[in-house]
Length: 568
Ligand SMILES: Cc1cc2nc3c(=O)[nH]c(=O)nc-3n(C[C@H](O)[C@H](O)[C@H](O)COP(=O)(O)OP(=O)(O)OC[C@H]3O[C@@H](n4cnc5c(N)ncnc54)[C@H](O)[C@@H]3O)c2cc1C
Image (cartoon, rainbow, N blue to C red; front, side):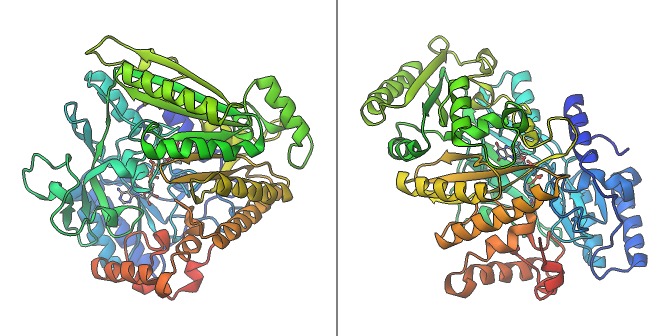
């Protein structure tokens, strides 16, 4: 068995079992495209000389380098690396890239590889080397005074949280609903958490990235040697290039500065729910303007009833028939649980009196504009001049809203597993960026519901309210061993994608198998955006070794290769 990637025993065993138990067809060895066995074996010897024998994995040891939620595995369409290489510092990384350039072997970069739902650590191009950066795991710096951290790729959200607790730093790092992923990978893929710095990529400040030729580049004030403002300011002198490394294959991020939330005096756990499907219009129209004018400074997370059910057990226990759960049964379950059809959660953070004042104002607005809804706020605070300990907030009201990491949401992927046992839990999603307008969101949920129910699936969704848009997540949890589920998920995705395309919606993030499809939406002026990025790609990575195909960006040598570009 390969060396563990987590020191936390629960994380390590959950991680290993998740991958191992997901396999339905034995792993088949594969070579990088256009590379002979002889050249590959020679390159492997060189990788081993750089990182050590035990840090180059092949054959059955690649169990942890596939997509555990792979839809096409049974049909022989699994995405598979030829080997995994795990450098521990930039010097080793540079040497690994030199070998890859010499032998034209593409690498697929990730930090921890927990991008579950989007391909996990699996490569876009079969036979790429899985370039696993989890051993580059130093916390370089944390400033309590300015509330920022600088981390290497292998630092997990849990590592950062633990470090802050251990050193009694008065900062609250943000965490997604699963704490075992990497800050770097999640931020680069525009992932989100729940605290005031939830939109991670918007709080990124100062990046170091290695280019395909081994050169190291820094961005913003981080590019000024010895600058005390490296991670304090996003100002730069000339074009901002940080964005070139987000959702990108133009470089490998080796350090990243990220802003954290200064520990507040008070936190208020707020909930708001409304009983009926159509109420989503009111929720968006009441809360949207408050996100824009700053009364609600942080993300409002809204989930539908079915997503709640997804956290409570298996669907068959709630509704044993095939087909979507009927309305009457949903109403019955809603009544039993005492929740809304739509359930919003958000936090208010800061000085106690200010938090209370925001809530009081919100109460007045809600009473006037959404009297049918139920608003609740529980405040947790400490003395003036002190900061709140996040662990003093009970998990139900705190948890990831106060930055405490866990594997809270993982059970949700088991929703569609048979009651009698067996099956393999998995999920896929379609997550469009939609204007924050009640009418528009209502129209979308009606459409999405119809699309899901036509294939016997429930509308299982949530959305994150930002100032001017919502990120709407249509989730399809499925049993990977069930062919009807796998087919339904693909049809639902295609139909939602098509409905979204008609309305001008793109996804905020994508599974490796649909990256070309999503990229095709950015078509202004005959795909000028793509041409722009490809020009940079060809200049920076002439051999096309860095994550070919990522976000639909292909290096010159693969650009016309339709077979390679084929996806599910
Ligand atoms: C039940 C469930 C709940 C989830 N909840 C959330 C949630 O609340 N919020 C959320 O955002 N996501 C969520 N996810 C999705 C996912 O699990 C997380 O986003 C996770 O943090 C991503 O994995 P990672 O951080 O290890 O990133 P990685 O897998 O390491 O990286 C993600 C991608 O970024 C790129 N990348 C990574 N490192 C580098 C680098 N050093 N240089 C260049 N490119 C790089 C790669 O393309 C990689 O594929 C959830 C998934 C599931 C199954």
